[in-house]
Amino acid sequence: NPVPPATDSAFRRFAVAVCAAALAASCLPYLAAWLGTPPGLEFAWGLGYLPDTLGNLVFTRQAADGRCLFANAYTGEPHPPRFLHPMFLLVGWTQRLTGWPPGFVFQCWRIACGALLLHAVVRAAGRWLPPAAGRRALPLLVVTGGGLGFLAPVIPWFTRAADIRGAEITTWF
Image (cartoon, rainbow, N blue to C red; front, side, top):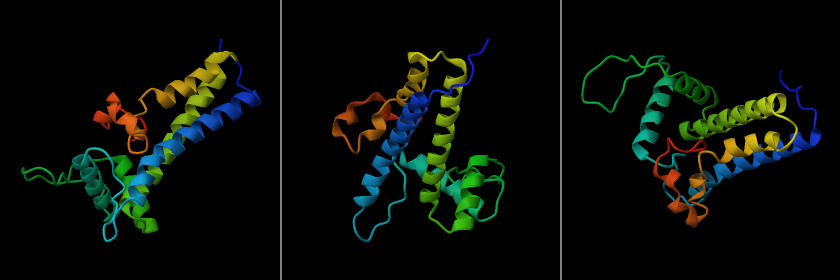
């Protein structure tokens, strides 16, 4: 039988603090890069493997232009648009509605999706785990399970972290 939903206010405060800290920490590398952008250049809000970032922005741009199916601009093979990416549709439509730069809109969606993921984890922990340490452990495991390499631009020691080698490895890039 599942444990009744958590009504423990201490657990809720802990969970909110962990989630807020994780989301804020995941923004630090982007903020550092944005603030460090030399005059006359524009920060594209992308970190990590540049071809992936540019490919994502191409799909976002196509959605902002009104397309629902996307063409892969990075192939030499001619083909009609046939890729459906719901996330890039939402990002592109948001960009079109707000007029914000595509990279910034992508970051807003990244934070919103991260918050939804953490909310679901906290709800699950509150419902199915006993009130002991298990409830507190699950949000911490999810937050740190992908590693902390995303903090490398802010904390140089983290450049040795294994998860910095590929954006697919970390949850928060």
